[in-house]
Image (cartoon, rainbow, N blue to C red):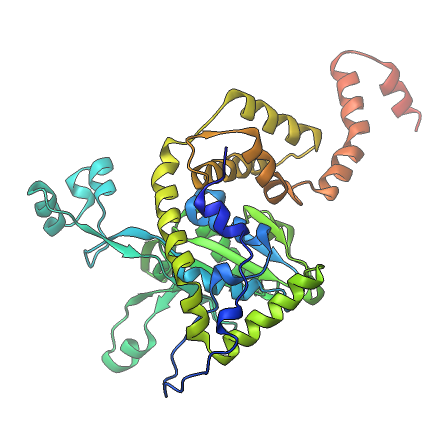
Length: 386
């Protein structure tokens, strides 16, 4: 069966020769023209992982690990042109129809309750946005805190939303995630895992939604990532420099074309970008109908057991990524090919050498406890002679 248009776009290798001779135009503006996502040469695994997490946020985000200059940040920023639309609340209080369905009309404000009774929508389609965590961000900037300006000027205390709340239903990019202060990293990962978080400042408290698509990147030369942070990301991509000479030369050509005339390069890839945007939206709409077959379930669990992985996040991420891949390939049933495609991304580094050693060290103690419980005296006598 031929692959879908979206998967074909991720694997294509069209040259950017058409813009090499274009003359740059001086627009006199400090506007931003991002490098097209699909114009990245090769790096299929990285592009696939990022697209899968857009299609299915339940994948749990992506961690990009690799040296400087391999296109990690360029790839994430290029996603802006492919980000799909989501339904956002039009209410200043953030009311959503799901609250009324679960709790009843008491779950929304009176104005939204009246709209729902009249059959009027309280949400509207809006495109996802990219939020980047500044390197100098404080904890209050991230989770929210007291508005200092209002406190000083008006002598009033009011909680302001932080970056996590503003990034609700958006993509949050954390570069150099391994260099983040522990308290900030913990706050981001806990909120991303729960989809909600609460801020308390003295007697004041506020709860915010944080349904974010989390993408992090790091250079392992600059320091390791704590295991608890590493395990929170769904997919992990090892981003290496390209080894093929032709590919590396094409990278140079596209970068120089972008530097000479970024708008021309974007125009060259406009049709592919538009097609990918539509394909991602269709895949997201198809995702709820995508199911796992019993064979796929048994195979995935067998792989995890053979690798000795304890974390149950392994099967969650593996199966959700496989569902996203099937949706991207315009299918409603996951097959073994989907599972094989995402296996390395989902299972990479899930196994913990520390836990293997720990459980191994506990084996003797567990055996002694079992012998005591089952009434054997041989082990206890041996213990008493020590």
